[in-house]
Image 1 (tube, helix red, strand yellow):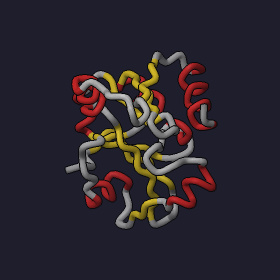
Image 2 (cartoon, rainbow, N blue to C red; image 1 turned 180 degrees about the vertical axis):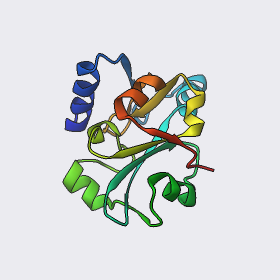
Image 3 (cartoon, rainbow, N blue to C red; image 1 turned 90 degrees about the horizontal axis):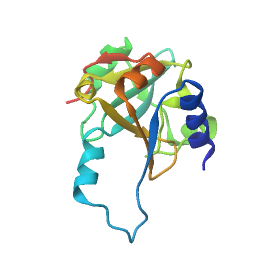
Length: 154
């Protein structure tokens, strides 16, 4: 278990949040189409950006959606926004592109959840490890992250 995945587990358990691991089978295994669709629809893409004052912001949107940068800038209250580089994510936070969990950023920065994700009772976020996710109640994620709900995707 990766350090971020273990850290995510500790955060969820210490806050008595019910969750389940969602593991993607390795290359040769086949995933039933209905299982893919069930988790894909409510899967969360987590982006890390910074504003012109270099404050970090976490943007959470549907995996299938595209970020609207104008709406995202409005949501973070800045007319400039840049994504945090792959090198910084890895060196400073221990995160890998494609496996960014919002959980290590709790109480560290501003978070925004795309309004489209409010249509689901459960969401699947990354555990911080490629191929592994965490499925939890949307309300628990909102409570834990104190994320603002804004429209940030198209």
